[in-house]
Amino acid sequence: FESPKDSDSKPNRNDINPSPSAKTEIEQANSFGSERAKTDTVFMIAPTRTAAMKQPDTRSQRYVLNFKQSVRGLSVGAPVEFRGVTIGEVISIETAMDPKTFEVIQPVEIYVFPDRLKIRDLKTGVLLPPPENGMARFRELIKRGFRAEMRTLSFLTGQQYIALDLFPDAPKYTFNPSKYPPELPVIAGGLEDAEKTIGNVLKNTDRIVKKLDEQTIPE
Image 1 (cartoon, rainbow, N blue to C red):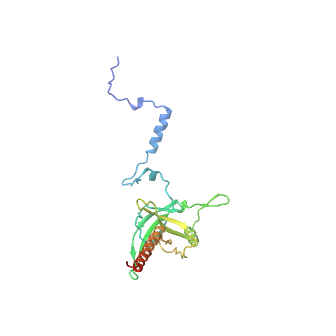
Image 2: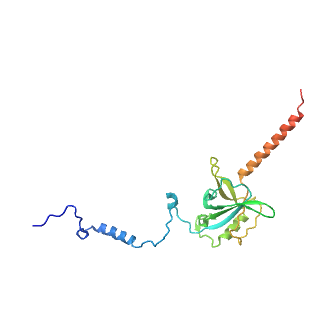
């Protein structure tokens, strides 16, 4: 007679005969986990699922934008767009003053991902390889009016972003690629111009009212 088996006893691994598909899955799992992480290995954790699934950019170029206007509403991580397409991001915002002239500027450093600015033959539609010298491409673009501008991302929150675009009537600018980071020229944003215009209108209106008051004949 065979002794009865304990119901709580666990089956032996050798007594189990997995199916061929299960064997394949086990082999894949073992091969995947064969390499262990080294001690003190740092694992980057993305803040969101969208950021985690985003295709990493292999190349980046650093530039600085020297604004003479307020940069309120602009923050690190804000997008850098070219005609609505995100091609970079803001990485640093500072303020600086010239000790001789006391001129104050707001240096804003950005990353531009050149591979996002595709080169395409407009006649054939064929994508062309990116230029080896990205600085030369930006130098040519600057000659054609390539400028940076701060624009409003949300009127509700006041958030700002950096917009890159072509302004053919922009003042001439000499690009110096030897500086690091190289400087991209900027133009005043439309919101700042609107604020100045409204301010001038209010001043002129106040002057007109005062003149009318002075010319009014007392009863």
